[in-house]
Amino acid sequence: MPAPGAPLKKLGFLTIGLFDRDRPADGHTSTLEIIELGERLGFDSAWLRHRHLQYGISSPIAVMAAASQRTSRIELGTAVTPLAWENPLRLAEDLATVDLLSGGRINPGISVGEPMRWESVRSSLYPDTSDAEDFSYTRAERLIRFISGEPAWGFSGKDGVVEEFSERVEPHSPGLRERLWYGAGSLRSAQWAGSAGLNLLTSSVVLVPPEQRHEGEAPDFAQIQAEQIRAFRARHPLGERARVSQGLVVIPTDSATDAQREKYRRYVEERTPRTLTPQGPRGFLPAKDLLGTSEQIAAALYAHAGFREVEEVAFALPFSFSHEDYVQILTDIAEHLGPALGWRPHRS
Image 1 (tube, rainbow, N blue to C red):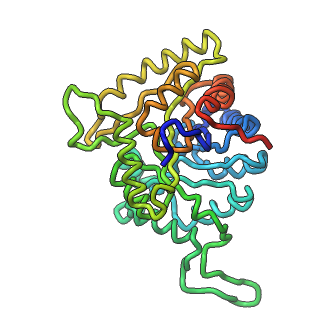
Image 2 (image 1 turned 180 degrees about the vertical axis):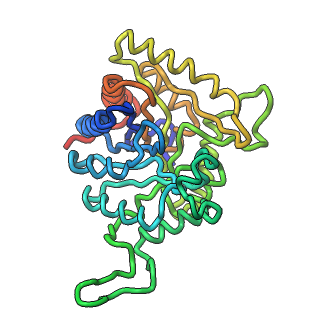
Image 3 (image 1 turned 30 degrees about the horizontal axis):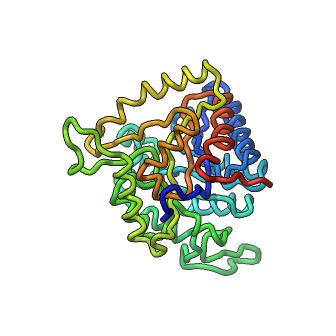
């Protein structure tokens, strides 16, 4: 665990890669250009979020494959891949393939649980097996075994003259298992990730336990997140050395134009009310977006109990901004906010 005020060791960013319905190629190209910019600016990692049946990246693994051929150093991750949409064996094949193509730079982040809007999508996603699908941690455990190289079935060797089969998922990428992450929002999921020996992705969302929901009182997001991180490390084989990355939304304005500052202010203002009260039966609570100069944001982060538990971050880019906005925000993070947090850019 880092000491208060310890230098930030790894700095990354997260994007969902928006695109226009009628011009989807432009949005994907923009995402690739943003990743290339991240590498030039010295970021340690770039992360992609799955967005199924939306105008965002539905296939981050394909985008990571493309990005791996346009970059040479920056690590590429998913934050996160909802396993409810995936076959663990096929996903293991794809991840290992892209990891090898990238030279060992892939960081798969995963989560479990029922797909969003399950009742609407079940007939399209699993028309014949929807009642039998298992969306529990068991699905993640299958993926972990396959990526680890454990036997996937009971056959290996030649079948005929040419066909030769392996007992494990192929290709196998050594080291990928150690770069598996779990996106946790609850205490239970953080503890499970620790017991499974995964790395932990925290985000700008936590699930507030029922005992911490008090009418008229805003829960302490930062404290809840810090408690989850400590619970994760308490279960992890590496203990205090277990890796955790934080993913808050930060919007530095150091080099922003007046128009951008006003746009960002309205964005944060519209989103703030939802951060005041847990939503729904699960107690869904987003974090407040951090807007201001890099100096102001750094001060807010050092006062954040969750941030004080981590040595690496993957700050989330706002979901609805333009390519030019992302260039400005990433440049300010790399040139101002990161250094204010003690981070040093990686220069090739």
